[in-house]
Image 1 (spheres, rainbow, N blue to C red):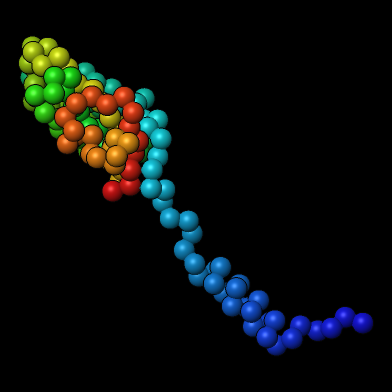
Image 2 (image 1 turned 90 degrees about the horizontal axis):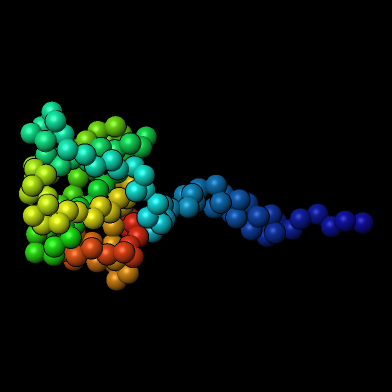
Length: 135
C-alpha cells in the first residue's frame, strides 16, 4: 500500500514549484564571444564629405569601438541601430596618416574588453584577443 504525501513533503514540493516559477530566467551572459565583425561595413560616405563611416549590416543594434593602429591617435565608439551608419569625421587621407582603425564589434549592451576586462578603447592599441562584456 502506498503512503500518501505527508503534509511536510507536500509543502516542500509546493515551495520548490513556486520558487521555480517565480525565479527569473537565466540572466544575460556576462561575456559573449566576439563573433560580430560581419555586422560592420566600413566605407567612405559620399553623402557626408567622404568621411570614414561604418554601417551596421545586422538586424540588431551594435557597438563599434574604433582603435587607431597608431596608439597615439586615440579611439572612438559608434552605437548603431540596424541598417544605420555613422562617420568618424575623418577623410581618407587623415585615416592614412594614422594608419587606419581596428574595429571591435559587440551587440548593444555589451562592450569590447581585453583579457583583464579593460575597455578596449581605453587601452588605445589594437588587441587581437577581446571579448564582449555586459555593460
